[in-house]
Length: 233
Image (cartoon, rainbow, N blue to C red):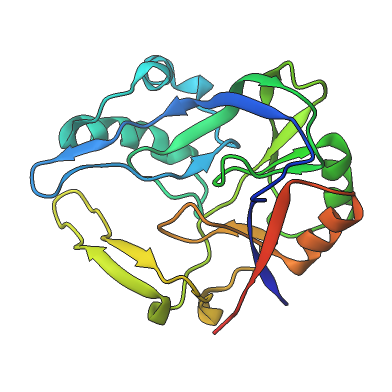
């Protein structure tokens, strides 16, 4: 199986579709007394927190980093709603995208680069192939001219250790796993490859799709998305 990094094309773009939206609920960043303030970039639109009462309202309004104790209180309320492969981190986003859209969208949109949206026809084609680990959630975008779906990419793949340069240490107080930078020509770790046809590289916002996913998209016509093959090591 071959794998590709999905990202927006550098242009010129064929499609004019753009959107301004946020996920319904967001865990705050954490202000750790040892390593400072930080947040991650994971988004899980399949997670429904509407049944958490006051916590749901709090997560709709939260924007500033919180103390470690406050973050842990909120995270404890979210944890029971997550699947095993959905990571609970500061800055985590949940529920559908909500906002506005304008213009015409191609079959697949990868803008911003850490989000992947598909049109209704692309959704039908992807499900028809019975891809693995495919989670599509209707986005609530006013003005999109048709239903768009966000692809949930879970952090179940890893970059090979030879492609990673540590940038910050882990923290035993708040649980920060430590930061790292990917090399320009990074590779996937073969030992951690999931069965999913779309996933995110752990610790990053990088989206990866399988050749099956890329082949379906290619048959749907032009999209302002490019797929760059990532070697497996």
